Length: 80
Image (cartoon, rainbow, N blue to C red):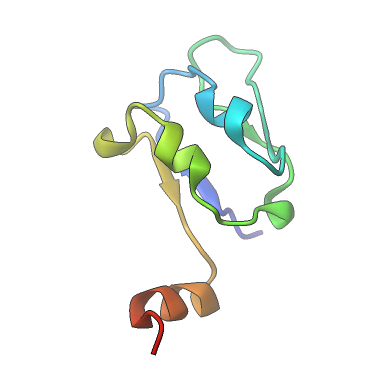
């Protein structure tokens, strides 16, 4: 199964800010304190990046957004 959001459990502190801001509600708080959120509905991700943008540890690699290949190509090309 494709995972649009990947958490690094060594870096993510389980603050759940990404869970609170996700417009599609694909994430759920992990019952284990300090653990990364649970990806409940990966197929419903809209790849808007607000979860990544809200993460205070994104520059340390706590969260990674992986758009599907067709989206990656259009992002790299831009509007032409």
